[in-house]
Length: 224
Length: 133
Image 1 (cartoon, one colour):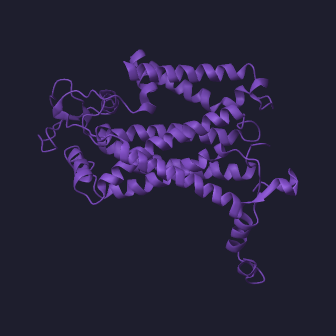
Image 2 (tube, each protein chain N blue to C red):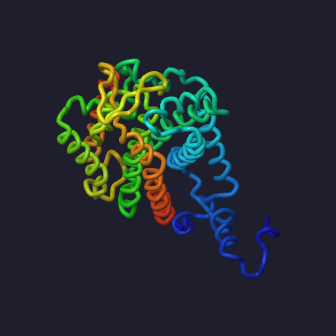
Image 3 (cartoon, rainbow over the protein chains, first blue to last red):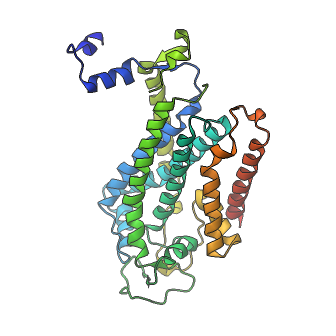
């Protein structure tokens, strides 16, 4: 390893970065295993991004085709069942890990000076992943829980209904829908889609970058 | 990057590579195993959405949205509901302002700690009520 690290006389910035952060970095021995919760949440986020990108190739966010495309992903697309289920399970595990991480930080008092900004960015990340989960549950455009649909609907005046597996009636500005069925706005679905695949992930990445930078700067709170 | 050599004796420290890295990898493998177990054992019905023509959905929101869903049922007025959510978010973000003592041990924070427990019990109760209703 010493030969590998020796390299040129003046190491490049990358080599120095790897050497400082990887080979010569020292950490306290007595650290709890629970400190891994934040890192695990990051791993599940990466899984979510990977499976989400795969699902993007098959999902159609138009109100008339969304449900059909989800059925296609689950039953016809190559490994679509695996990607969709990994995405579903991963979302729940990620949110569970973020909540567990936050509760641990709360109980350990790790939000105290000088880590206030770590807390603010972390709590913001929790709210963002919850909103991400919320927008995600509406995307199959099926018979989702009415509460989800009602909330989306409130953002728009135009409604549409679908019949069967998306082989539907034309979308009108306002149509009658089956009694008790959910109503999802025509405009709500694409806007939720953009929020879910672009806007919220970008904000999450920004907050994560800040969170990790601050964590590196202030260090692990336990036991300091 | 934080330099721990200032706070610990050399024998209390260990290198990131390979000790810590192996530990991280082990935990990540456990996570992947849990993910795959979820994929295998989670019932298909949990993610199946029915077409809209099937009528009203009987499914409940996912577990992490249950407390918010239950709150929305308790507070039907949308403005008030959003106001409560906004207040809760503000309280969560301002936790470092509420607890400004330097003490980190739980039993040395007798005022702050019970409030946290009460908040967690309220959130958990809302979720359980939402699940059972």
